[in-house]
Amino acid sequence: MKSTKHSHALNWITYLLIAVTLCMGVIITDRAKAHPSRDMARKVSSELRRQARRSLSAGERTTVILQFQDSIRRGLKIKSDDDDNDGIDESVTLRRYLRQHRAHVTSRFRNLRMLVVEMPISAVAGLGDFDEVKYVSEDPNIKSSGHITSTSGVDMVRNQTVTTTPTAPVGTSGPLSLTLALTQTTTSTTQVGTMTTTSTTTTLGGQGVGIAVVDSGVYAAHKSFNNSSGQSRVIHSQDFTGEGRTDDPYGHGTHVASIAAGNGQIASGAYRGVAHNANLINLRVLGSNGTGKVSSLLNAIDWIMTNHAAYNIRVVNMSLGTPAIESYTIDPLCRAVRGLVDAGMVVVAAAGNNGKSGSGQKVYGQIHSPGNEPSALTVGATNTYGTNSRNDDVIASYSSRGPTRSFWTDVANVKHYDHLMKPDLVAPGN
Image (cartoon, rainbow, N blue to C red):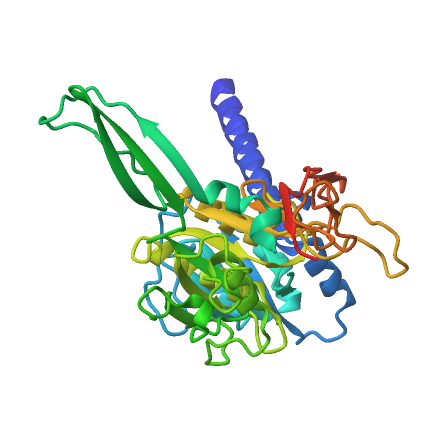
């Protein structure tokens, strides 16, 4: 009898403990929903959190860039306003959260695993609670950053003579010529006994290579972009600004494209581009005033990821940027650039034009994004003083200098700066 009573008492204690535990679980869960953990809050950029604190209206809206975790991409497909299958994954709860707060997905970048979402600023912090969300940041503005072949040394590498001595006797097949990528070759063969020596003159001009100029547009009809047949080497143009034009009313992109691939015809070769036979892919992300949005640039990068093989895009030039705040590990623009590099492309990015203060004092730590991305080839500017000699070249006073000051913040609210040495190289730009 005592044993039965003891058993009943033990059961009641067990039930009570289970009930208390369940109740505590409900309380903890509800509290977590009402007050996101410090770790989850760090998934939302400090600028967005500041905007939320300053917001005076509950209905104030903003545009954010939502990055997804790489490790949990395989799941349910997100549903946007006009597309039931865009290739980006989200949980049912996140989809419900966006719908509940009347958020609108305005752009979807399948290759980058990112969304651009327009939503109430009061609801942004809650995005950090979802496991599939890697980071949430604002959609800031971007702007342009802007005798070259002689002073940079390009002329010295354009023409190379390489001599090879193959082992194949005359009259038999064998590797009797040397070919290099991006080249045009002329070959002469000299016979010495039963062996041949092949002298190959290689002209580095970028033939067949596509250079994506992501900028303010390109004036494709300019004679500097014609090939030897008089046809334009601008083989594709596309607008990502919403203005519905691909020309260059601002003028920056055409200038950049000519540095990369101008033929120098108008200036009798004095201002020929580095890869004067390359094809150009004109991707317009800066509007008529020379500014744009990061989301437009991400849209262009996503397009490149899809189409780079079709146009043999090997180089992507971004002479533009935005102030680097978030660490390159979480900055959406840096992560997108890393995707291009991982896909086999060289990404050239501007260091920026903030090398001195308004009073003319030298300033450090002002490298722009995506120039703060380690895999990007970040380029600063030099002043050549109008001479071909490099002995008198100096860094242009306006050119941004490292180290990079982008950062991430830990759960204790301590900032950790990237401190990368940038730029990677400098070139004439004064």
